[in-house]
Amino acid sequence: VMAEKAGYKHFMLKEIYEQPRAIVDTFRSVLDLSAFEVFFPEAHLDRELLSKIDRVFLVACGTSFHAALVGKYMLEKLCRVPVEVDLASEFRYRDPILDERCLLLVISQSGETADTRAALVEGVQKGAHCRAIVNVLGSSLARMAQGVIYTHAGPEIGVASTKAFTTQLVALFLLSIYWATKIGTISSESRREALQHLLELPRKMDELLNDGGVIQHWAKRYVHVTDFLYLARGILFPIALEGALKLKEISYIHAEGYAAGEMKHGPIALIDENMPVVVLLRKGELYEKMISNVQEVLARDGQILALVEGAKDPKIGPLELQLEIPETCEWLAPVLFVVPLQLLAYHIAVMRGTDVDQPRNLAKSVTVE
Ligand code: G6P
Image (cartoon, rainbow, N blue to C red):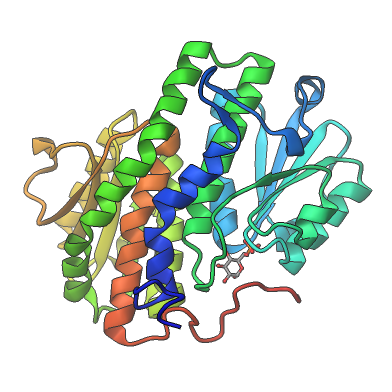
């Protein structure tokens, strides 16, 4: 078993460290570097079809649902097409309004999740165009969909999804670029720039993985708390949800992800000196607003654990726990920010002595309702 884990203590840790490789495998097969173009032959999404689509539904469960939430930001901004995101278990029972101008895109690591399968069946019955982003070749969803985009994460054994998630984000990014190119909402210059960021991503991820010691130190400090709060805005908001989910799944600590703008509508009541608050900050239009949220937490003696894109910013003030995230474009920032959150959950879980790869009550794929 140790051999299968390639010397890592757990599959989850191995899979976290495999992410730079998994990302390369996911883009290598669909990227033509000479022309800086994306190709998705198996997706069956040609220009004619894409220009007809006026609504997209991204549907998934668990961690794949968080990828869908990130996908909404990318597709709406890059392709100017309205996107609805749904949990498969809700979508399948709410009689969704679908027709031949809709694209239903289900996202799944295993391709076997019962609710996601039912969502796809619903889409086919209602005449929507149905596609799937899946990791497992030949899985049910891969066979049922009218076109597939594969993530090439390789087998994921740990119940808590890591490399499948980051490759889903990359697949959604590539799809957005491809779509925007087909319908003409992106210039070739912006496309080249975005893809250049993608090419640099694996190296930046390696940098983050080599910084793992910082996160171990954070983990040690908070191993005994009972609650955690994760705050972010914009395209990083789903990463706050995912960070909280990772912690819940494997450490059994109660954790909540929140859109930082909603803090005043509830979670702020929970903040005291015992509450660690993870904040995700990247430069851009929402930066100042995040800084205000940080100050609100500090004013209530909450403990800030900050992931900050780029070099230290004196404006944030003397934060004790701060980790620098390499700079990239907005679309790919989620792929980097999630890595330290995976490691934080992992190290806390190990220190608490839980069964990291097979947490209690959870299954790798939920094939029955
Ligand atoms: C289970 C797993 C999660 C996964 C979710 C969706 O809950 O424990 O890690 O995100 O199912 O699975 P899927 O295979 O459809 O992505």
